[in-house]
Length: 576
Image (tube, rainbow, N blue to C red; front, side):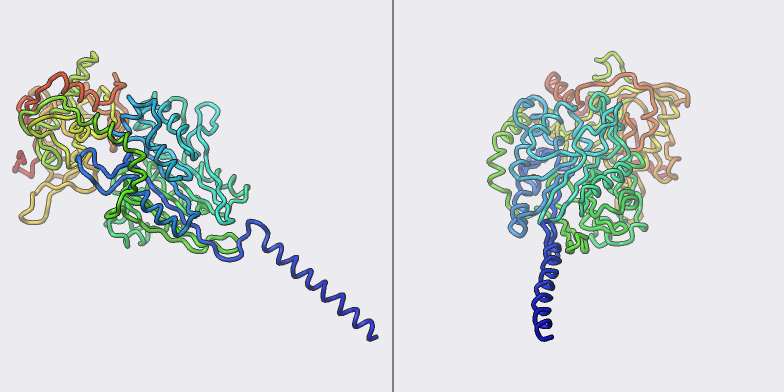
């Protein structure tokens, strides 16, 4: 009996150990973490061709650009060398630098790709502005990049196959991460048809549902949506970081979207709960951290003025148990000297190009708020160029309309440089000649008038922007005479409208010069989207402006200024 007990002990103990170690070995199989794992993700978005900390439009240094972002990225990599660096699109449009290398300097390496390669980006999604110069320019940029440029919902017309790599799977610290690229489906509204020929922009949310299934089948544990889109609603005070942590059902639609699914971030979170994080863009909003039904949402503003930092905590089973994000501004930090040196020759070439003198102004053309509050020569000058384009094309227009895009740019008395015109017209819009009716014209002006409200504060100027409409969606018209009474309800504000001295009739037809964004219904101008399209340019309005000034040589504001519209509060006219 003693023998049997002794041998029984000898046999059972090793077997117990074997079972223990086999079980432990299974627990420690490759790719399975033994403790909580921290994953760091950094996001830029809407960089719009900014590398140097330089404002081309204001012609001064400014806290923005990838050189400053690089300093932040390097600092964060000291804490986590395995961090993921992503860009959310609208990258290759927006500054004279990238304009030059998309057009005359096309054959050279794309400087944005060069810098982003140096920064070691892991992926970038495609934004709507990536198509502004056509697919040839985008394809070359993608070829110059040493990282994938992704979008799952852009497919080839006909066969429905993805045009671009739809997603990236990356294993970090043993965690398998899937990054889905999604692009706002509004591109066909804004873009020239020839620039997106052969492409279809599918529903992004439905596409994400399909991609999630594919990623799960491949064992992905964490899913990131790198989505060039924003939320369709925002907190009333969106500049307060704490407001983004409130219940999103209380947020408001500020009227920025041109179509219902342009900003689909919240719908994505609601409909595809498997997505752990939505890295947003497009809306140029700063969203430090928001939670939408358990999905983390963040967005890092624009022009390389900051980054979104996401921190995920993942348990040994591969489940995300904590999510956090924050916005980190580049303000006050030094740009990375290596990036400045890498991009130096590109920056110098662009500066030389935009600082060349092409004409003279004999007086000021005021800009910004002053140019929006009352009729003035700057909008009239832009409209004059558009009238000239239409006439030269053989389709003279009856009416032209334009906006003042930013608050900083104007033409001052003295030399006119290309940079001045870039400052005035910062977008790569082309010109369309459309045919509308008098009813369409009234509808457009009523929609236009939503930009304004009346101040309730004593002592302030009574006419104030409502805050519900982007500055660039307030148009000023030439060729008609009109008055807008802001004291009246929205939709009933146009109190005077004549053409060549006669009241406009509802069935009267007009040829109108508008940019391609507005002609496509951009800014909510559906009446233009449905208009008859007579002609469209292939050259940007800004380039026409440059050539116009080159030929004209001297611009006199008195030659352009025609007082043809007023803002009214009852009987009080704003005309200064």
